[in-house]
Length: 327
Image 1 (tube, rainbow, N blue to C red):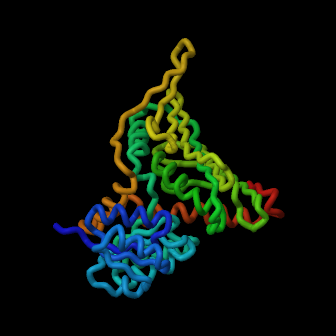
Image 2: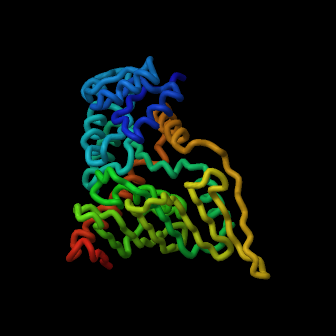
């Protein structure tokens, strides 16, 4: 069966990776962006792919069965809603929306029209993350005691409302997935505006993950002002501690344990060496073609938006940006 044809809307730094993958999968028909230079690059690299700067042309094309949205996050809701109303299946980059109400509205629209609505929570398709999930489920780590995700880089674009809206969706979705938690609980949050531009660029978030008969405390640390990129997940268990360092080229996943003599032993589990984004794009096409519910469906996206909306509300009650902590 021939794959459904898709259009990619928004081809910035991340959108161009989606173009590459859907073109490789033979599913890309149309690319849309308001930047003519970006469109010219697509025409040069993919001569057979149509290009346009008009969203209406995408939504009115009967051969486009699904749209992939990689526009700035404050436009996700509006573009996704228009696509669903036009009868298109939708893949939208994180976050799905900027409010719980908008996330619920998109879910309802997709359900009413029997359309696929998938969010780009990339790490749920990462082979190392899925290897770690299997190890946790098998009891390899023992009783889980704590989970922490550190995601930091140097960001000059700063288009999001805060660093948490930009980076934390990856952390919340991944940690919830690993721990089989459908509704993480917010415990404490703090953030700092170091540039004086009303955007929180350094933040932490304490959570409680309940699921699979256990409650695991966790923390997320995000930063836009760190010159050394860090993408690291640590899961502490009673038997072993897993560290997933996605900035490393090899041995991203390591298991640390102590022998009875106190010697630290490090193991490196094996997993398929496949690009997570390719697997994610492939999964979306499979869902569109078969009607299967996506792994990162609207409910998965809703939980992330719910947590971040609560965090935003808590931070808004602070007396000052430079002293941001609430409980």
